[in-house]
Length: 184
Image (cartoon, rainbow, N blue to C red; front, side):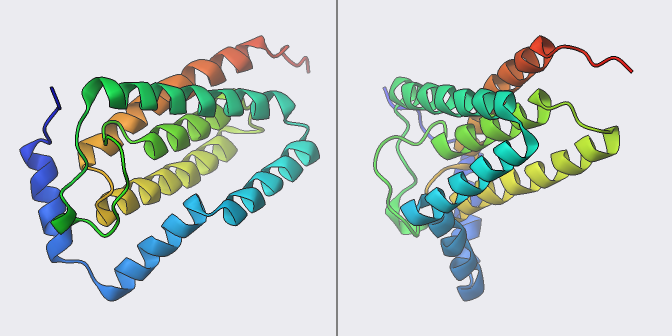
């Protein structure tokens, strides 16, 4: 039996749909383009590959890739288990297919961000906090865009973040614990 949206989900999406603006629509579509266009994704992957080689962050890169794959798989499996329909077309700007809960994009991006954050030995606590703020902002932007577009309900995104964050944390923490400690 399909899982219905909550009243919070419906209230939030109705409020967003009633207050969409031309500049907001353009901004969100731009973010969507970066996250779904093959050329943009190839550029991002190449930049990450260069950064991985430059920083010799091979373990973090492998851990993050595994977290991304596992979170994506888990979200896809959970979508089938919950079978929650996407928001109705009168509230959306895009019409993705398939089930909505949890958001695969939210799970994948959270897994990647949390695996990088927890799997890396940062030079200082300040550096770790700075990276955490940037990653949290990026996750927030992705989540807001998915709800603004009407591709997902709010609780789809929240659940995706929980699933992905848990997978990323488990793998990142395990990877970091496996690193030999540095002696001073």
